[in-house]
Length: 215
Image (cartoon, rainbow, N blue to C red):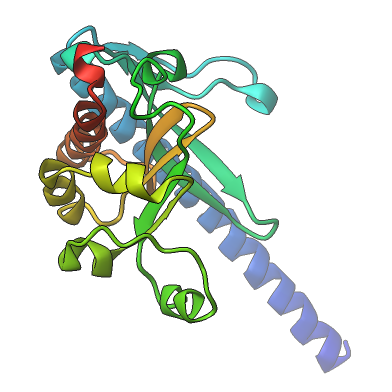
């Protein structure tokens, strides 16, 4: 047999054997991550006021993801996740969102949009090129985050000291308000109960700043 053909056959067999080992390992790891996350979310639901865990359901091609619903401090919220595909890869995000109908009861949030996210390598360039970045007068917070808002004076008055302290401890969480929906989002399929609690508490800090806990 031609040596080149033999080498090609051996390489093909080796790759096939490697894939046959890797695929089950990857599937097992994915199942474990799903199980760990589901266990954490169930535990979190059990400790939240009005908390309820909703398991994922439906066929794989249009499956409804698992989620937690709750009403801590009288604020109806949902903990869920979503996946963003870039074509070659995909990224999972864990999200806390406050019911838009409830959020719009607060006059401080009505007709306001904002997006607050962690400074990164390109943020400075964006500022130099004129990208909007609202400064609120707290150097630590201004240095840590990009702040974009439809009303600069309104967002300055909205961001309380409690909000700033909580957000500086969770810089990986992006805060947003768009079309009446208030969200706190971080990258990853989060299974750490403490991190989930902190993410929810940050969303509630924003709710308290807006007066939603008494809306």
